[in-house]
Image (cartoon, rainbow, N blue to C red; front, side, top):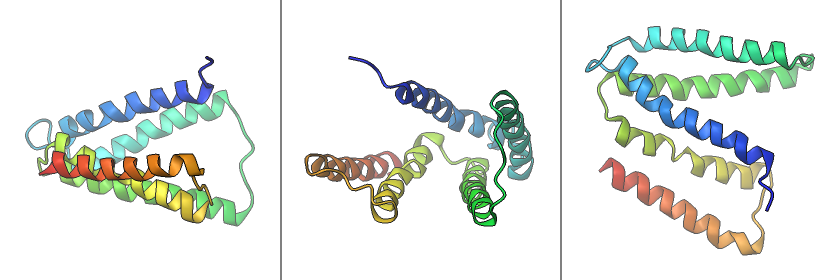
Length: 147
């Protein structure tokens, strides 16, 4: 059986995002380094610029000129940054990363719901039960870990 190339790439995302919460807690929590959410966000912005700048240099693409495309792409960054900022604030207050991460990773439910409703990514009939059971398990897991 051949492994799809996207699966290998998403495993890198899984590892990066899986370790990110612990590093963010060490940097922002008053119990560790205690860097303010503002300073952490600035350092993170620089790190993001380095990674994406390097990627853009290695894989150059033409930038869009359509204002709608530009606006929606900027909205992606704004939405992500809002979630990130509040995660930094919570971590800086000493919240346990082992409890908050399952809660904010319940964002999967929102993505699945919006994918179905807005993008018409309806699961086929064989997968509907899997999606429903998976969603229930995500909610149950977040609830169990956070309580």
